Length: 394
Image (cartoon, rainbow, N blue to C red; front, side, top):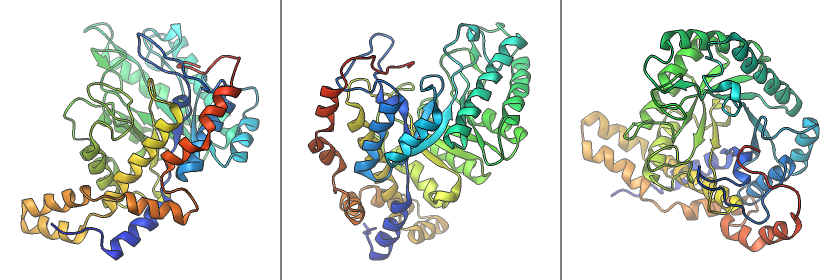
């Protein structure tokens, strides 16, 4: 076994990790649950301003989470300029703006793919509202997950739905200002079960290529069939320059939205290995790393802190891969040595390296323990009394 912790590789890893940032989802700071029950927790945010405050706590202790992704209409406020200023005062900024096409009765048979043009127009107009929010907050990314699909064969014409989708997406794309991006997400099943209208990365990519350079694919790690080689998809999208963003979570069976790296940390490492190999970890690479999780039974802020730490650990291990040895083994056909170059890095305890990074930034070496000692959870539980706690859908 080779030791991947050589001084040169460790120094390079520290430099790269110092620049890595991970965007947080506002909805992770509200109550959430399953279709059976939403469990409330003391001190949960009651409005978008308090969600931003909680997200800022994650950044305060990790130093790696400076952006907060918003959801429209869940995070609607009267003055988005005021919300953006509030974020800036807390040392964070507004990230992607997420649209919502799954909570309106008119969308029962689809939104951007609906047979009725009036419904499609309504869905496009919603994205115009989202673009207005982007302008008010300084956001540059409009993220669109399309929940449209069918439950039964023959329910609708599959090709006609794709044609309607292409037309609707062209209208949404035309709303963007220069410098803005459309991030197009996919999901192979749910909420519909016979056919989703954007079920996979290929469908998303085809639509993005037709739209133009400001359209890129979003990869949610929970949106694939069991056994899918996600790192292969990452490689292909990077290869053609169309991987715009990640939604990081973890899963056992479906889109479980668990803490990233909790179910299969080796998969997260393999994904980050492809990112590092393609030099896509750079801040100017165009790839936005974001969490998309719902913390149903665990506390919200600690759940997000743990998620950030897991991504950092997987990234650090990927940065320690001996690329020279890996390439030599691949070219010579030494299968086990090539695989060993990855497993050696994956087996490395990178926590001391990350502790060194945090201390160099003036942060506590253990963000999770530091937050627990801060008293923030107890303080918000005392102060956030009255009002309505934010929850799924609000």
